[in-house]
Image (cartoon, rainbow, N blue to C red; front, side, top):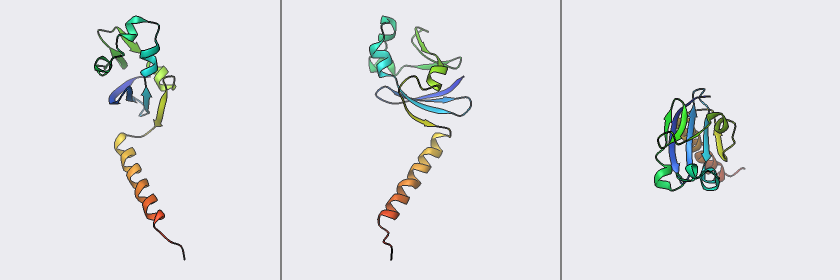
Length: 111
C-alpha cells in the first residue's frame, strides 16, 4: 500500500491519500503522545509533527527517525476519523450539495 499524498488538517489530523484513490483522515495524537519510544514522542510537539513528508510511499518524520506503516493507516489502526474513496474536491462538492438539500427540505412545507 503506497501513500501518494498527505495533507495536514489541524491538531494531529492528517488526510492521507493512497495510490488506489482511498483517502483516510487519521488522528495520530495518541500514537505520538503515548508511545513508549522516546524517538516517536520526540515528534509530539505540533511544530515537529507538522514536518512530516512522504518518502517511498511512507509517511515519515525527521531523518527517517519515525515512520508509520502505510498498511496500518489503510486498515484504520490509527484512530481513523473518516473514510473516503473519492477526491477531496468531490467530497467538498457533495457536502455543499448535501447542506443545500437539507436547507431546502427544512424550509419546504408539504400540502
